[in-house]
Image (cartoon, rainbow, N blue to C red; front, side, top):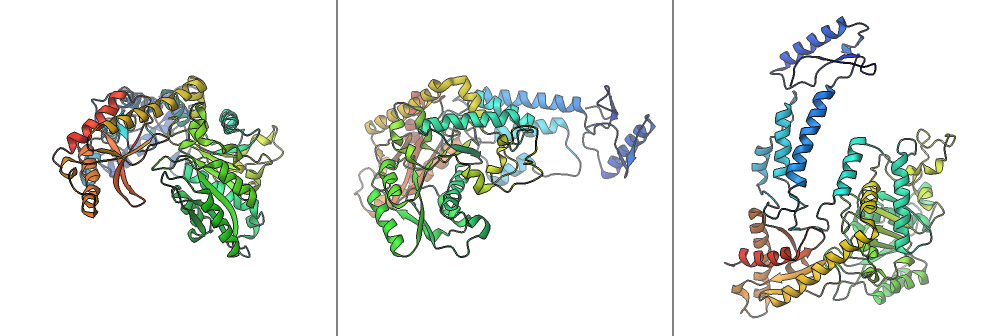
Length: 541
């Protein structure tokens, strides 16, 4: 890159600009270069120097910056996008932490690096990162690549908007409004409200706080002092964010009553009724029930209608954490999994999971359309939410959020939805669940594979019993040895880079695999490969 100062033509440039330089050899060398540049600038007509800083012109070389962006985008296209569905590529180029620290050269220095060095770092970051778009990445409740959502992310990253007022984010506020309206329709509400948040955990926290505000509005000004002991109810299989939210909001984790689940991981309504009555007898104040539509491990859907009956009987806010399972609403075949969700007061739904909208894309949807969200969270910042603006200030929705700066996450879901249509999104859900069903039937046919339970969603949980354990008697020693199998297989697949598959112990059960189908790039052949690869990796166990 040229180390000399460049003159930028045009009235907006204001004269010459100091270069975007490669790293000088020392502080002294850098100071000399800066001094030379300043002298050159001061010799120009109308040069201004304040506190030793030349104020004429920009301080970056735009042409060099544009070239860097172009070359970096080429790397992204070649190394990420074009290889996204290539099963011959590794899911992960595994390196131990200390080794990876040396490879990546993570040290930040006083002097900047050259563009060539930075481009190589970009390649290194891609090479040693997990390829979540790989067809054999089954590790989390997100996977795959959607090209339209990706372009939307490129656009928003380039524009760098923040969604709080219409004047600074007109398009993205209207997009969010349109997406929320459509999602509300799928829930089955005639009207409602909502906001996109940085994660389902935050959506659950929003809902918990909103339910508390509805129960005792004075808490916003007066705080926790003087309130009765508030308690909430959720299932044993709920997401861990419920405990975190209770802790964060000052409710306390001891005031979260975990309701027993059946053998499939579904909340037992009769147990919920017992716990609500128990809390009232103790003198506590129940205010919220959180049901789950698609539990993290087993993919279970709580019986929403029966839970809603109990909530109506006792006057409790019903929140449904459908972060994982909410996307089944798009499918006419599988939306029955969420029967009764229209009776909820709030719903968390993450399109970045099953629908591939890209992390992060998470909505909290609220049935109340009277402005409850804004009443609960508004701080009326006078420098942002002036009421005497020249446009309709009802579009300044930022006061509904606990954030100030907020990403336009709805845009990537909107552009993807525009491209695929509801029919295309429905096809994604149906195909993922059909592939899960195919895998289940293959597991049943193979010796050594054992299902934990018949899945009702895309979570397929199973054990692999290696040859050495197949003739052992069922007992403590057998289960102790089986508990060690999944971690060994996981280590081998990671170091080989052939695939990624999660495992965990759960509710007294020893380590088992949890395979999740999401990506539309996944084929029947990948299901077969998964089972073949497990057998191969465990051949000596």
